[in-house]
Image (cartoon, rainbow, N blue to C red; front, side):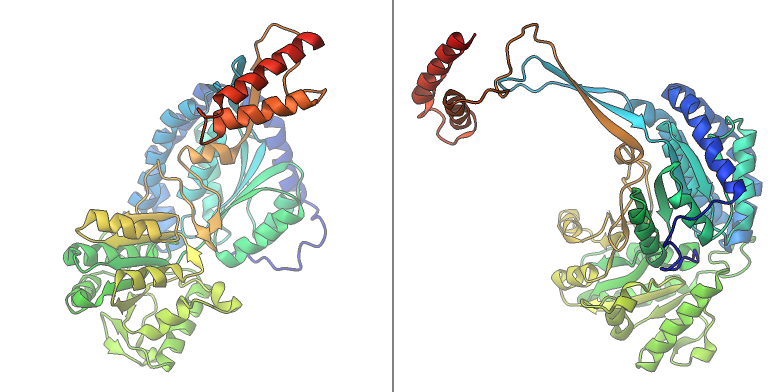
Length: 522
């Protein structure tokens, strides 16, 4: 987590000379980079993809050592995901960034030809997380770069080798100097970047607590930002669900990325009619999860490197146990003794106390800022889907959820009622390049990836041209008159009113009076 505090941005921060040089370099490179066609920018992305494939073994190992995530998962969730997004973006952005022309077939607008243009913003700042230190900042940066922007990437300070790795990849892909700059450091660097007049927009991925401070700083300097923040992901298991499928999917979604994925499942609401069948299946799947060395390709859950997360997790679990909860682990079974727990291995809370605390309908401010990071899953029984929906929506977060049911129509009805940004039916936590990625409530704002990102990463400009070759005044120009008032009211009745035929005759008379008025005027 970035070490930002509420009292550290009372005045603009003076940039270190090294960071100032990076920003100036990006600013100088912007003119040439933004003038390139999208097809020309795409060739640089293709080179980047080639270098990533060539160096994937080094990338995978570095990420595994920095994050503690297992190498097999890193290969798919970081490297494959990034490559797929890059390849998709190479094809999609030239189409999405094209000029869009349109006409409006209403009286007074027949001669107008209008178009929408997407122009680069300038230098954007991408602040990466420690959970996905490679793929997320890289994919976000490439989206901004294809839109014609230059980018400053600040990887997580908890992954010190990542900055050098990303810098080397772009250099070997032969990107122009200044187009992509990598800056290292912690919260003090973020404050300096946000306060700089060169930075036009900030893209931040991280915790709600830090994201709130970033948003406050951006507000102080009147700078737009996109916030990809935490989640408290929920799964609803319906009475007609495929219980084997649901158990396997939820076990993966809850504990992949060492349980630290913002989109992962943290809460399960299972219908009481199938709970006694589902819960043993879920625990059996979790029991099969193999914890260990992140460099071992057979490891499913690795090691948590962030001591703050483990400390927070211990506090939450001990509080739940003190309140009479039962905790299940593969090693100990049900237990109420915190001294017997290995907080890096999957744990399941099987009663309501912790779940109710975490999703209280009226939580305290401290509760709102607590994100349950780590390998902990809560399971709660519900008596109806309406109750499940209420429990899911009571959370302060709204990033992702899943619905498990054989009734696809019913599942879609439930999905539409959930206050989150992404919902999966009979799957969970898996992205596609076409998804507009983002959440609601305390999970942030703005959307990245997909066509929705174009409006986030460009200045949208409209150009409207009137092709009428006449010097006549527009009807809505000065001077105003009683005749104009009559004609506008007649148009409103005739074109937009519910009884258009009944007023046709009256409107025709008003139109004729106005034509005679125009003849006298011109």
